[in-house]
Image (cartoon, rainbow, N blue to C red; front, side, top):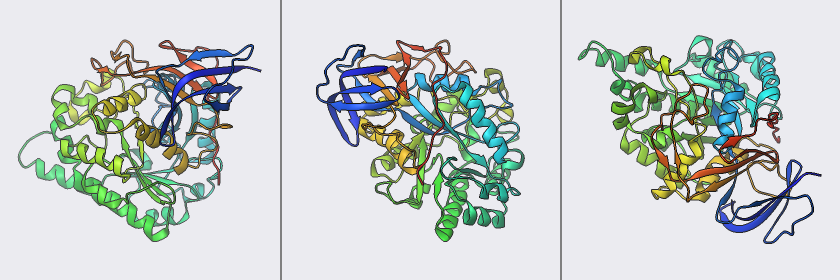
Length: 444
């Protein structure tokens, strides 16, 4: 029987921090206690002075497989994820071909079973014509339904009000939305073209402004209230939208909100230096928006922190603004960026754990994960807050080979990551053995 004994870690769990020992047997946490004796055959990890967290559950990533693997793959991006302390993820349907049928959805699970270093689930993508496929979703097997209410390509954009009514009425699973109004964006484009002949990256938050976001997110919230749908609004970026969401604990909410690490980190002032590297949808907004998002995390108006990891090649970003794709690679450095937020006084370590592990597990009803509890899967990350991590394109594990954080020194370092009891990342190296990820299961 394989066993790992983690000694003297500062265990961060359910609002408390306490120095504890923890034993992992096979895939699960067997024992948590103040002093656990070493057994013959134990692999002992001295964690004195380090923080032990439940691994981050990232509810929004784009790993680009199938069809777009020149940007990334399930194998490459999940490898970067575990190096960043992310032990589970939920991946989006805008691949090629788009994931809009149950058959296509299950094919992605098969791919992940062969190659994912982290635990996984996948969203079905809504279209204006696949309501019968949506009805086939199984709440015990599938994490949710992604609805692009603006800012998508191909047949994944859903704008017809009657179709949206049907989706919010009929979906048997959590609905997650990208909310930007295409009509408002077009109005903003027409207005701005009166004063200039072409757009630049500095125009991005003007074109995709708070009104574009609010017009769409308020419509989604209204639909969810009308049909009492389970709704999770992804990547909130504006102070204006916060009025749509109630403060307080996530339990019993049927409408929840998410913020992403790059919207908590960057502002419009960073466009001058980073340009298309930080072009994303919804756009990175203004300093006041960022400040209000951070406050909303602490008042629990925003329930979850995710990444929206969306890699593109360096060459794809080195084109004029209008042609550059939206999205940036983030999974390897997301958790580290949050520890810098702690150092700045913007949140506590306990709040990080709540927003990145506990709340995703609660909202998605993930079985036996997201907490450090006896009997739960051993999805864990050990963090050293005294050793910095200097980011470079060369030490980034993303398939695209670059990071928007290149040149920055984070205040902390990911020491170890366990997925289902397997030590998959240690000493700045990802274990090259067979991937350890499992399909996420959900309680009804």
